[in-house]
Length: 486
Image (cartoon, rainbow, N blue to C red; front, side):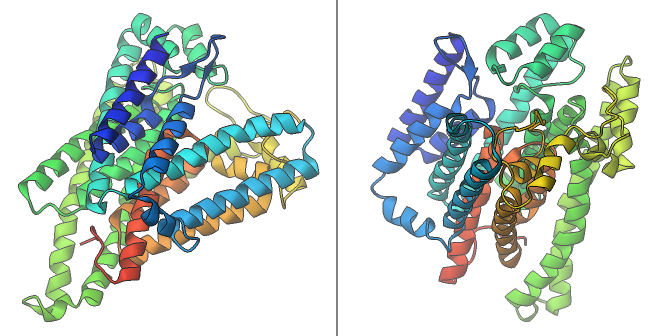
């Protein structure tokens, strides 16, 4: 079984890096494992999520790390971002159980099997965030930058094989990434005899697009970060190149999250980052230290920010322009359809959340968006939902918002909102570029995929929690954060 051999060698590399005290490599390999590891094949031939052995491995590494225990205890305190997130997950789990107990129709055995998948992802996220938080904050972004670079390059190779060499690309993608529960999109490509959308190293173009969107957020944080040294300027140039490739791959995947998300990110950065810089100058007292006073100081800050933001905007424009002409001529309708969302982004939600009468490009949906059936169950049971299992053959998936409301009702939804708003406010208050840029993209991704419950989003979520831990400790101790919007 080549899948299992790849996984074994990958996990062995994580252990070797950890034993040799190379935390950057061990955490980076574990993060990229979450993104691109092939499915785990059981003796029965069934493919399942490959992250179960990774969760077990990281749990052992955390428990054996005597030096980090005292630090982790403080970071798992309820008032700390990591501890608050763990408490939020406990509330969500209890709300799922309450919803199932009150309104579920399946057996408790089925409920526990469903929750096992959630527990695996949640525990893996906390473990990855704990290990990442042990690394200085200035290097955390470097690790994720390397992971995103690997994602873009791997996605590029797979996309070329899928689009240009179907007889190689489809069997390879099927062998590595299909599972019993995730094979319908790949089967559709097999039946058509051509990849009409790029899948990258994933079983679904939607998951590929959302992963690229989060990666683009990481690249944006690198681009707007300080670039005083030659190494930093080289990293910014590499990030811009990866940004162009990542946007193009997202468009070839016809991923609405990327097509709409990139302009959203640019507009959001343009509107939010300059005011934060002005506040930064006022709060840091630059006016009394820099020649020309406060006004000249923040003008220089804005000028420094204008260069990376302008470079990002130009890179995005070129990527959209060039990719328009690279989309195959036999897909003009799809090209016009997806690019049309740039002018009417709200319409991109109709296929999922639309009311009866909306149409999808692939098939008519006279009964409404594909998520309406699950939302109707929430409307009937708004407090705790109905648990993580369908009770009336409703469709579950393709939306974190939909899943949380269906599974745990308003209790689970409010827990998620409170925790993430707190983390975002911490990033705003301390002007942390990583948190400020990534949190809105996480929200956007939650409308397109069950982003907080899938392994592919764990590296970026772990980065957010690790950065939150660093920023919180800096604010508590009165020390300067490692990276500010400056």
